[in-house]
Length: 423
Ligand code: F3S
Figure (cartoon, rainbow, N blue to C red):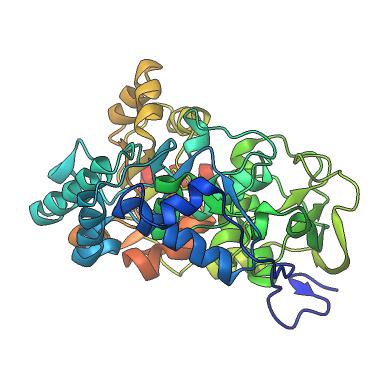
């Protein structure tokens, strides 16, 4: 079959059905009946409800939780009150729990141009999370700053790109949690054993034969965009990417598939930890071939020339990605605004390496804690964006009102220097 088509797909696949009766341990039962307080009871009610909906037979302990839904722009006042109420009930997380990006750099506050009202409300959200015991790491790449679960470890993560990376590249086990369900897992230390926590649901259901060159990070994002659209929530198994050895490329691939589809796990033959296990391909798997990435580039590029903002760091940038931008800038000044979003801890490392100073000397910024897609970008004057992230490009217009150009890192750096998109 041709590029982007899948044989025999007529609807999203479901988790391999389990209809077990949920059995709780004595401690879990005590949590449910309120012996650990009303906050823990509320968390256990959510975990148990999900377990019953999905036919799980038991709960499993999780070693870490990553919570999404942090920007006040997405949460709103109702979300803030929900968090505050849960904290007032005495709920506390029982396992290391970190946060997804917020809508602003927590230290810069209004210095990026966001309104005082938003800054105040965003800080109130972070305070509420901290009262629950959550660490305000505010990053979508917790695995780049020390939270690296092992193969087979159960976690409960919520950010779609991080979920994809944890499952696929690290071989850990997590469903794509929602905000409340992730917090419930943190407060109880448990999640229900359904979906990607079970062996049978980790088998590939879509074999993807890649027959065109995939070399730049933008190419990996473009491939992810195409496969995600076709796969929806299937589990892809890639053939033809055996040479990929960069975590940044896999990060782009997974983030794009999680955005254009709902892919939470994929395997790359010869690369990812579960790919070469026995019976990794489900017997009734579908087949897709990709022989041209151009449809993705066409879909992700609007016809715009003048660029206001160039954004790197979606998912949040690692040190090598920041260094690459510095190398390509080569000391030149930028005409467009240039932001590199990253984890606070990564920014500190970049500062030590002299990378932050180099970006700032060119007129750019290394911004921590935040994501352009969840920030109130409408409060700023930017109208056009250039990015090398397919996920960022996919959401920029709908979530941030930014008309977008998508291309390789080199092309984005040139757009920053000239203020124009070329090619
Ligand atoms: Fe991260 Fe935001 Fe991109 S959460 S993956 S920087 S859209």
